Length: 281
Image (cartoon, rainbow, N blue to C red; front, side, top):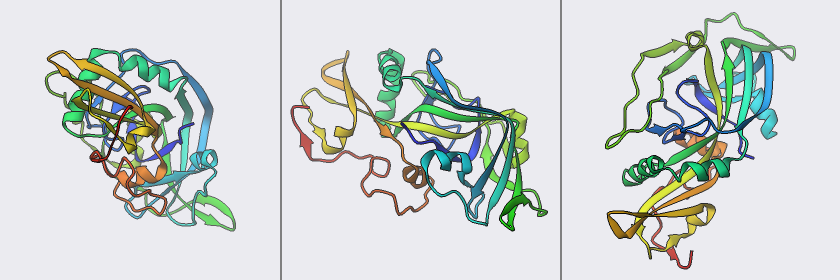
């Protein structure tokens, strides 16, 4: 099961969806490709009048929530940088069979064109398999007094500047851009979008163009591969691999944050291929 990862700032629900291929989970205006049809999914959790606590760093970026921490079994918060979260409704939805959905997705020529372009640009790609969505979320500063979490009397918490954009589809021969809809400075303005995505589940995707005889590298062993001949050159093929889930320490690395859990040489920190190949693979 993929871990649910808290986003540093919530995204508009219009900018990210189940089954979407994205190049950067932190920004709504990164290149992406939405699925052609909505994949089968299941509701892992549903709750009305949802309440939670959120921790953030000194820059206002969210780092954890009580809900996500309970799922992962990790510690949630200290007594500092704490927020109270209230929402009309919360849902945690996940794709029912991620591998099957991805296998169907990569059979489409549009998907392969998108992944080929991402390979040319040497951009990492992620497959969205789970979302935690909030309806009309409200955030207030909180303090811990006598073992109880209460609303703070300090000024309203302000989010770091973040676009709340609507995602658009990939088009050829260039990638379409996202419409810039301004910035959000006050966290309560996020509720104007009505629904916000607080956390995501992601699988890594790897793609490259090379000769049919080109061997794989050691890191490729973590991926389930498929191969597609390129019409214009019989000697070249597009290789597409679906990998393991993105970890919380790797999400922190994408934000430029250090983590003791971060594994040196992992795919997210070093996209370039190793020169050491493996044959017969």
